[in-house]
Image 1 (cartoon, rainbow over the protein chains, first blue to last red):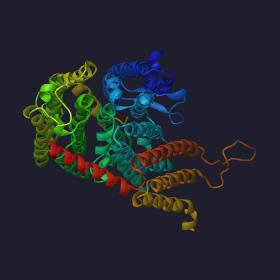
Image 2: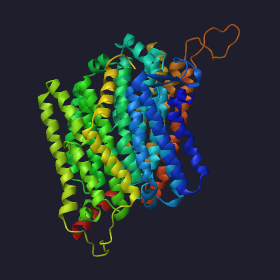
Image 3: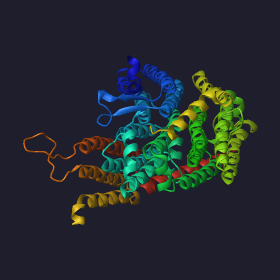
Image 4: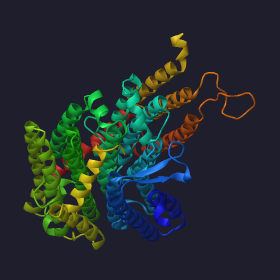
Length: 497
Length: 129
């Protein structure tokens, strides 16, 4: 009985749980509650994925109103895959949230932190589940608004400035999407994605549809921080509380990628998307420039959070290059990288959270000798870094391998070479951290004695190493991730959503 | 005739451009939020305009009425207005906090202060190593 309502429960459980946090005054209780809610979402998403893989698309009609009139939730393989990524990362990160925010956020704001976190989770899950474009816009704004507030909780006053800039850029992006939805509705009279995909081809040659498509691409690219619309991201990630950075780096841009794929492949359709606009060459060029500009910028960062934020931008570039191939294998590579990057970046940023907890700073200069003082945390950063580079036996290798195969299948040899040289840049920036942490004497300051730095507490180490082991596990046993990603890619290329 | 028929849409475009221009060109944080609100409002007008059906009345059943305007965009835009208000409120709250933290609401001034602390930090680092 309850099983039939899973698609809506996926979204409504964290949504209803968020205000309930207010009644649990005690900060630890709220944390426990949030962890339970998030694991509940995780179990729902696992069941949903199983159902979708075995019996196909799940359609849920809200309030029993059938599709063109009511809002429908539509879980296909792609959405189920994304739901699993978001909920699993969210749950793992939440495990160490309490320890981390005790140092980074003042006591009276702890409850608010968890409320915002759950709301943000709701927004992301909603975007992925819904089959209605306006509903997707509303959820996008729910997740974005809570994201702005979460980033502003950072200790540094620059967090406020970063949040403000993100708010301006994010709102412009969301309003662009709203304009596009209006134009699409004007031409087709429907907001349902499935209906849109059937009716849009009839009016595909009009200038209105063309404008709508342009608005939506630009709007989403603002949200996913594709070069050159990426300026808001590095500071937002660098100055937000560590937990928030880990959560967003792993999920927020991925959800934007989801929207981009959903609109280009399902709603507008492949033939329209890749012929009307020169989208293929546009994505390819912007993706490649993004990889090189961001990786090079990462090399010169002094703040390690900044460094990994730039590296996130480079990874978005890889995903977009995979999209630009516009074949099943290219899309599979993109989806795999979405999954794998979520694993790498959540592990890396959570490890940085542990460093922040012990040292109170993530400046590269203060990493000196940390390899001996915090061996487990630094080992996690090294494995995550190797994964970023794409060393075999890590997940990073799997997705780069699939991307290279997709490019070679298409005969894009020059691009293949560029992608490989992009990895060389990753080696440089990861090496800078390794060098400082392992090959330099322990950092000493004339004012304070740093010999007392201990390994991070277990509440950090356990979630970090769960994520690191996942990085290695899915790098060796690729059955689950590749199978699901391939099935999702094929379904996106096959029949409409 | 063409121009007058599309009167609403001209207003939408003009407001949209004014809004975006203010967001980009002004350094005052409050003015940026005002620009953002104007920008969003233009989209609201766009939705309301497209719902109008020539000769249609308000969508309430009545004798002798057969043509109604489309109520759906109105409902959509009610939601969008709520979202817009939330954004404006959050933006203004951030400006208040920024004013407390930096003592200014001018973009240039805040960025100047940030660059200043950044330089100091890197100097400290050089000194220590």
